[in-house]
Image (cartoon, rainbow, N blue to C red):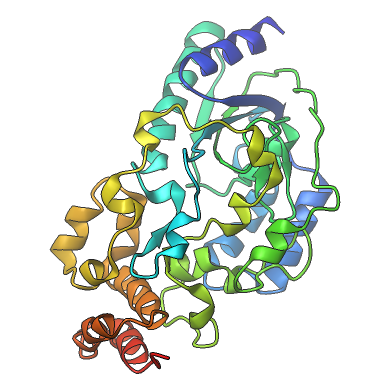
Length: 342
């Protein structure tokens, strides 16, 4: 128990907001949910989810020596209304998590510091994971007492609501499991009801192929035309289901200054974004997770948002891209340029 307490104290000193310990395995429920998700094709073009499904469903298949999974949470709760930019159609709405430094880099640095502390003080071996390996982060975090998976399938914390970045340290040390702090969604279905594209076929189930986060970030081709009008001005990710969670009332704005929103990413003008070439895109999104999707996919999203405005000047901006070298961008530009203004 002394080990766990000292590790917890060090994690909090490093700036983590939540930490918990659980056996490095997953129960049959988590595995069944993953199987059902994949069999339904709800992962869309994210083939990597299926390719390593066995390791994802069983952490000890990934690393047989692992005894304990240490789940860590870092709050990125915004200081203001996460959905405010949705009311400004001339601007693009970028998900709260991407308005600042790439969380992978920030979280990985803290995890490595904690992992080094663990090995230097208590021995054993460790492996660090931040959304880059076949690890089911949300079920592991739930097992470790950080919260529970809500009806929107994301982790919900009693203290931090739906605003937690997650990372894990697997270790060969056998540490006591953290207690379950309780909590749940009850009869609330706000997250399900607000989804613009009806991406939840049922509570606790997500069809990623209809999810705006998937469509704007992971999906490589043209966005299905039936879904384009439903997406509004969301150009990278979507916070709707997270932002309306009642448990957010207990959260406090993130303490991590690297997660403070950059002004130029809070409500950028669609006209400026549509004019970005590859160099300008890389410069604007340097250090941001947006950079990884590349200029073409991003401008596709911008054009979709332009098509959902009633601004004639923005139609002109779309018309300029109808012969873009990238066929997906050109397709989005033609769609946007010919949308009715009334």
